[in-house]
Structure formats: structure tokens, C-alpha cells
Image: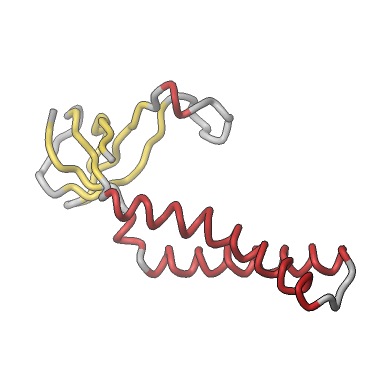
Length: 130
């Protein structure tokens, strides 16, 4: 994945604070405090200066891995919890749903742990000046 951003400050050596302009397909759900622009810290491997326009990248495999970790695994865990109790025929509908919800929550906690442990794999990096 490649995004373009403007460098707004250099808080420390090897790190830059950039402002990424969201495009129309990002949507305006209201989750971002500052509307169409998002500010993040990124790894600076090329030595940028304030005001530079840069290309940010993250590997496609890291992006797909993060999406699987955050979206697919908790969903599979929910259905596994629900369907296991359905197959065993040992619980009411409410207990089945609760079992699925508990496994969903556990999978989210696992995703958070794995994400923090492998944080450097999921970071944006400045690859070039534009």
C-alpha cells in the first residue's frame, strides 16, 4: 500500500510526524478527530525535512496479515464457539451466543497481544520524497 503525506515535524532522529490526506473512498465516519487529515508518526529512513511531501508504504503482506488478525480470526472464533455448542447439543440459544461472544472477545485480546508484539511489522515507513 502506498500513501502520500506531508511532513509536519521531526520530533526525533529517525522519526517524522506526517499528515496524511484521506481520499474519498476512506469515508467520513467521524472516527478521525480532524476530518479529512490524519496525523501519525512514521519511521524516517531517508532523512526528510518539515514541509516535504513523501510516499509512505507498508508491505502488502503486513496489511493482509493485520486485516486477518483484526477481522477474520475474531469472526471465525465467534462462529466456532457457537457451532461447537450447537454440534454438541448441550446448551440453549443464549448460551451458544454467549459462548461465541466470549471466544470473539478472546480472539480480539489475542489480536491485540500479537499486534503489540509484532508492532514494527505493521508500521508505515517513508520510502521516498515526491
